Image (cartoon, helix red, strand yellow):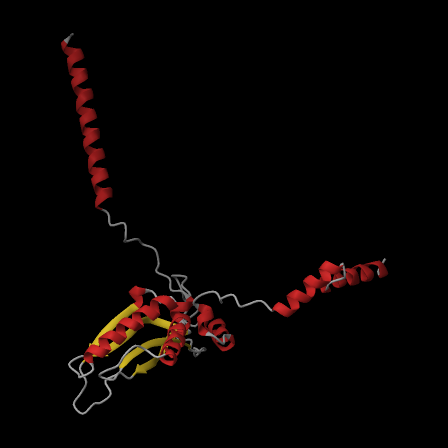
Length: 241
């Protein structure tokens, strides 16, 4: 191997090492970049600018507890089931259960809360949505009930028409504040049940008499309403020829 060849290989290795070093620095710079920070313009949705579904008032259910209170009566259990079903359908947030402490009926209240938990599980209330709150009654209070409460949703109609921005100057191409307000306003007026905006409406029981009537006709070979409509359409089409 000549001296010239050795120098050539040394230069090649030095160049390769330098290239690897630059590549490592570049990768390190990319890795140090915060992926959560971008230069994109943060946009707000129309639901954020003009919310129409908001938590409303509290629904409260008191259960008076006697010192020697036994198990829940059938009537008390039925009322509790109706209330818990209302929470499942209309509740916003957790279900709070407040029980007295330091009172003559504290032990009975603890037993009642255990029964409430069982009924809530049977009705279908998730365990992680229940929040227990022991409370100390104020001086002079009486009764010391176990209290259930939850917040319900309500529809809020937004006020539209307030345009305080210069719509002719919008270099960021962002939606102006009043954009979409009219649609939200009309939707809030039309929706009767706020829960329809939270989840699909549950399936209701079928109308049995009408279904039985149609199946009975079908079994006898008689015409059903849908078949009558199809024939009527055919007659109109024939008349137009």
